Length: 320
Image 1 (tube, rainbow, N blue to C red):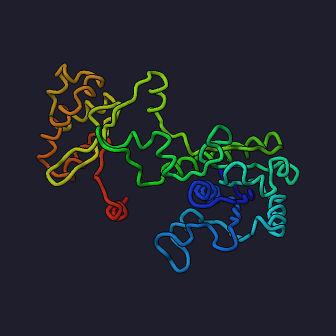
Image 2: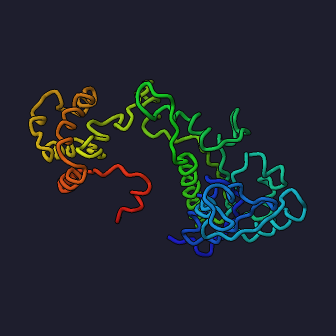
Image 3: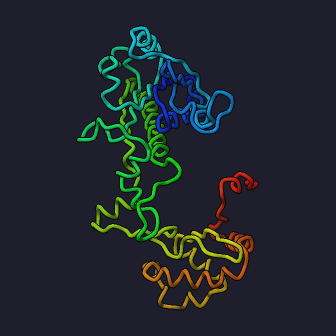
């Protein structure tokens, strides 16, 4: 799929919106990024600088063209309106009421370009008691319950070091825009999308909504599957992810622990989860006898998902 010939006017800044429009640009869209005249996108000067531009900014604004406008001045508004008459998509991550106060309400956008796909990315949605609140990734991680799922039992809430709320929201927005453009090809008309940063709990949400139970924190272990996590070796740790019974059988055979297969204590995943700590110790008593490289070779040969635990430098040094 290609977005060649699709023009995107991008009013976003920081991460969630710029990541969305960068994905569209990667797929061939002509993205025109509109920045404030005085300083531009706030992240232009944050982090590691390469010349006059931060690598932080460059990463999320690759393949785009840029223009600086004062959108509170008549001249800037006129230029934006002219850009929108020839655009296919408008993406912005202002709070829901801001664009309207600039003079670009939903009604005005339809007057300018009835075929425009307008995507608003926001913290809390377009209605409800928090709709007008500002939000950044960290606030959403905290308020969504995401941080409460991280770490081990007894630990304080823990944020993800990667801006996961921004990235997930940007992906959702890019997918929504792609769907709207596809629909427009069949039924020529514009569309308005709103994508909130607040929802990303996966099975933690569905389990709670259906049972009322809150899964305990399990650190690097999986909340629903055992064994699954980090295991000590003779020279470090490895990540092992046998996500179902078939992989569990492969794992214990590869480790030479076939006796576990006839032990009724671990006959089902439910039983293994209940005795996770005990089972992990049995496995680690075996994995500690050899190096990480040894086990990665053995387990990959057996078709078991596994890998080393890298720092960032080691990840970039890996041949893959």
